[in-house]
Image 1 (tube, one colour):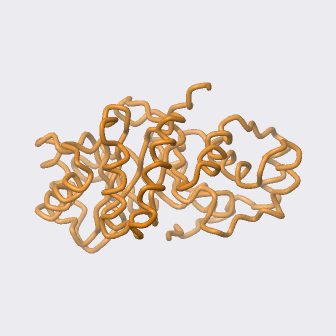
Image 2: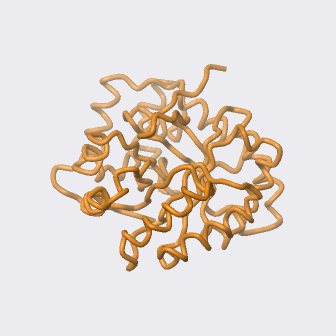
Amino acid sequence: MPAIPTVALPDGTSVPALGQGTWRMGEDRSRRADEVRALRLGLDLGMTLVDTAEMYGSGGAEEVVGEAIDGRREEVFLVSKLYPHDADRAGVREACARSLSRLGVERLDLYLLHWRGNVPLAETLAGFRDLLDAGRIARFGVSNFDTDDMEELWGLPGGEACATNQVLYNVTERGPEWDLVPALRARGVPLMAYSPVGQGGLPERALAGIAEKHGASAYRVALAFVLSRPGTIAIPKAATEAHLRDDRAALDLVLDDEDHAELDRLFPPPRAPTPLAML
């Protein structure tokens, strides 16, 4: 099986362009064994970037991830996120300690502010610096930040080290393409796309023509669109073997110019600034 393409972070670290999301995991203990099995299969398939958050399942998703990566930590690029109400200097350190405990690890590869809250960004950056100095995280980033939020962050001391911005982005949610994506690319900061095939609203009928042309599912076409965007990391959640294998196969689906033109017709890119959508 060919290796998964990689995307470079600002510090030069390469990570898989296709990872695994864990939203809605850890909410039902009866599904835990299946969720752990799915994550491990994803690792076997090379999807070694795993994204989670304290918010998911009130910490349950981090516990699932911890079980899934037990004995395989060195294979995994591990990402988690903290609540904005914990984003002051002390709160960042305390939230990270909780996440590390649930995950059963000593360090996160990437720690994100889940969305913008009322705590000044300078306070959050101070907390991130403490964690970096203590070796508890390797790098930091943000999630659900629009362009003006990113400009504010980059203008603060240390803010230029932000490793990624994780946002809602898929074939039907293309607002970031107007100004956020160009701003991130100008600084070499990857966009990490959550819900890259939507949340239950995949426009299968609209994608049927392209799917039939390639002998693929509409799901695979939608994910291939996101994976085709330069400097983009996709983190779909997949809790079944079939979904995981469909995710992995999306890397083999090469959309041509005709396909992209049809997708632009069906789902036009933004023609003006568009407020950032979030789930």
